[in-house]
Amino acid sequence: MKTIHISQYIKLSLLSASMIWISSCNKFLDKSPVSDLTTENFYKTVNDAESGLVGAYNGLGDQYYIWDFISNSDARSDNAYAGGDNPDNFQIDNFTVTATNGNVSRDWSGLYTQIGKANAVIDNVPNISDALFSDPNRKEQIISEAKFLRAFHYYNLVTTYGKLPLVTSLTQDYYPSRSEVNDVYTQIISDLKDADQYLADPGKESETGRATKGAAEALLAKVYAQMGDYVNCLDYCNKVLSWNYSLVSNYDYLFDGNHENSSESIFEIQHMAGTFGSYGPNMMLPASITGEAWVKFNTPTQDLVKAMRSEGDSIRLHSSIVFDNTSNLPSPYTAAENPIPYVYKYRNPNGWSSPNNEIMIRLADIILLKAEALNSSTVNRSSEAIPLINQIRTRVNLPAVSPSTQSDIKVAILKERRFELAFEGQRWNDLLRAGSDYTIQLMNSQVKGDGSSLNYSVNNNKLIFPVPQSERNKNPNLDQNAGY
Image 1 (cartoon, rainbow, N blue to C red):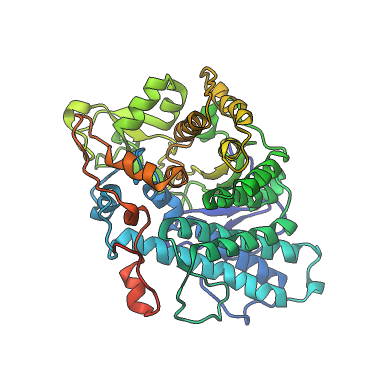
Image 2 (cartoon, rainbow, N blue to C red):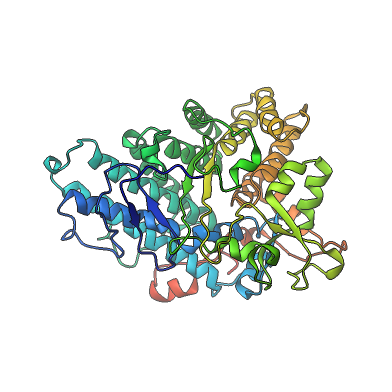
């Protein structure tokens, strides 16, 4: 069960009624979140600063972090189909997305709203008198937590849409143009390095759910990997591994609901049953668990199921996927393919208010990312990558592998990440790092259970989403991605 030592719960005023943020110390006593962007007139006291930060954290209850992060990564890849009955999800799955797609618009506007909340903290908390803070480090820590959140949102935006308007202040131009991808990454790196100076060390119960130094360093490792800078990626992987994180002994503990905020978790979104739970699990689990028989979303592919079975990876298969017979078949499944696979990493629907957390970054991800960095041509220490792959395999009782070439090691790492991190929103970025040619060939070769082609017709333009037309209608300075 979640270990929570708290002075009180801090209820976040989420429009989606999706989560509760919890503090285990007295720092957040009597705080209410700032639910909308506010001016400097609000930020006068320490209480105001803490409430503003709670308002920034509540962005982790946005629909993107409830389950769109899975749709945009796993259902876009070879891990899952869209499932459900939403044409916008089908477009994402089938690579027929248009600039009017509702999910594309929702995620852009939702993440920018959360960036605005972080900006409100970053802009205004420095103006509060230092003398008001009983802990002299707390002021900088509040700003640093907001900078982590801003960086985290921008990372998810830039990997999804490419070039972005770079908004780092509430007083900026109302009609910003898009900045180059490298400029966005430069801002993300700057925010995370600033934050890393003042964030709390990981491992303290008082920091459960908060951004810590470990989270900032892990996200830096992921950012550098996505940029292809494996020297810096390796450096930050090693920084993360120097903290007191450890793999949980049983892979299933990560998802059984009884071991949340474990020693493996680096950054984890907190939920509690009741008004502030998550509706994500009900969208994905089968009727035998939820009691609701409509067609569910983000259905695992036969390709993934077959690959895991071929590997003999029964532990991760059955921790990640549950099978159920249904007459409400998610496309492209047929009745002959019953029982149908469903995502099982988020297991307790509790109606529409699940207490299941979402782990955004965990140690196994960073271990395998270190292996990827070691195997890169710039670092070129491939032999050191193999024990890291086998460290992850050992936990799930799989035999050690011994790939002999850099190319073979790359394939082994990509496969291990696929099985280890399925339905955790990592697969699409992993494929992009493997290369656009690789991703295009892989996705265009995908087939249904009967062997017929899924006819995805992926090209370079379809590897990122379009800029939402609704945003371009409001901002004449937003250009469009090629192909849209």
